Length: 254
Length: 261
Image (cartoon, rainbow over the protein chains, first blue to last red):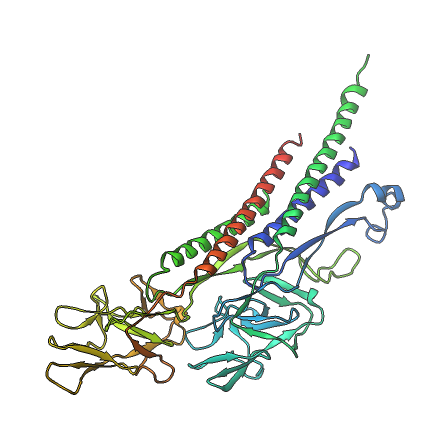
């Protein structure tokens, strides 16, 4: 059958995945600290080293017509979201786009930009999911316990209660943020990379970082995804018409 | 079927809860002592199409994986206990708390409820009660012939009796505070109950240890900011709309697939 059918079908499948990613972005438009995902695609050519024994596939002609597209990567855009004033003393925003809060979860230490924290029943600073926010005091790190009183959190992450320093937030940065992977629940996992303490975290108390979704961009992306999908349909129908001709007209005897 | 349909549907559901919450805040805008709540969102799980570090046929490992998110949900609704505006009423039994802290009232089932709504009344026995008739804890009885009631910033309640020059003390208002007031449970009527998340109440004399001092003749209004709620409502509506557009796009794409043949 005609190769183009499979190429167009691969394109359709990729557009479907793109819409999945866009929908997730739109679904999280009001999620604090959410970072936008962007899918990128690549043309996939069977390489010589993949199939060394396959001589026919190595010809330039075959490589060209067999080039299907596939999802290469879903990259996360770590640019800052809007920072909104809330006035809640436990809403913390990091205006440094490279900085993350470190939180202790049952499945290891994770990182987050969602600074909508609260105090749990033991007096520890926790995320909305109940995970403890980590303190700079790394040894014996049980989290940050905040006593009753007037809480003020400074730009460098210092926590003071009634004017006395009680603890420091552990705010970190990464050399290569592309190694951060989303795990849901507003958390990121560091894969093959180690956090370094941020020198300038720029913590803002009483502010919350919103998601960095740009609805216009997502809408335009959605329209183009839809139209490209439609175009592939046309390609497939054209190919199908060619096959129909071959089967019904060419094969007609007298 | 398309993941996008369900992902966008989860976005619409979270926005619906967001609007429900905004509507409740707005409905209580003139409710003395009411505290607004806020919905917190989180992203749902991610489906891993290719794990990070997977080895390709050529023997190179991919530095990053491919993950597709599956939408959003509501993780918590949180009460925001910021101070509401004060309104001078001049009523002797309108009491406001400046700072943290809650009034304690005895509920009909014997449990203690906590409230910030300070529009108290007297019942037929002369006890200080909430508008619902719940007794203030500890109970304070005002003598029938008292000509005026004065409440100090430290919660001391004194009355003037006819023919007397000195005021006489009839009781003390105690306040309770919680380490995590956001964990309190609302049961309506501006009353909160203690939960495992709020922690045990610490009671004390108003004005001490940051527990909040008392102002007489003043009512604390709700802390709902209409402008803020309005802006939240607009963004909530648009987010709902844009998610419905994603569903529509997904639907149209499925229609295109159906028209392939």
